[in-house]
Length: 385
Image (cartoon, rainbow, N blue to C red):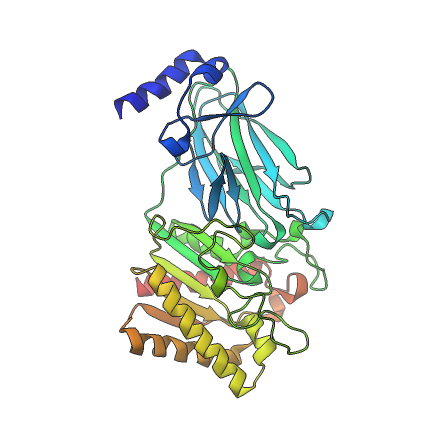
């Protein structure tokens, strides 16, 4: 460790103008304060675990850290007059302006940037409030994985920076969330229930999942896709949609990316599964189809338990209807428990949206309902833990 500390001190002694010649190893090789060329003759500090706290499901690709899922991000502390976050947009992201990936940047918990990423490459310039004291910077992907991720190529500091970025403290409790559009906070900022989907109305930080983690002082990772289900995605004509399923994607960082999620390195204390709403568009009240859902749900619970051997698993649904499927979730929990002896898997029925509270886009829950959802989930988790 002495050499690593000296390396960081050596960088500070050189000053930011000397960073490019410091010659540190890459993060992947265990170096601290690692650098990467940005193609312009200057260098940026790599967004890796030695320099930043990585939030949610992210992955590294040739020195670029990809924020791939709802709520994914980075957080770090640094003392500098200013800095720049060098960002790149997922090439698979939609070209429509209202469907571009949306992100937010906070400095000392104050929102300073909230916008879609329109360009293939962009530099977010930040002036920090105190050049002599540490500031905490947090970057978060607000929109969902289906709309593409955002890559962090590096952090460029002011030449008079007094420190290098350092990760903030990792919370003791970790929660994994598995869900659909509700967990993505689809349409939460819409003014009207008739609004069509747009990323400027989808904000994970206002949704029940983030609010739950915040109330419990927990870190989190998320697997959520609008329209996806357990045995069928959302369907308008009752035809099974088997290409919009969450279980096959659970082991991946995100759909469309080859990176797999390392559960051993990111153990969850709690896993919340909020699925079934889209399945109900397929099952309706057909007993055979509902039984198919129950069997698929039980199989997925086995997968979740295998990946998270120590976690409390909490299963819920019902906010947007489909309560008729909930008894099959209860049965799936019992079937799983009978087959495995697992007593740390529970379920509860979510309260449906109260019309008096209003609706988000597409009759999704708005901020009022998400807060109520979070309060109930927090109570369930606290009671169980």
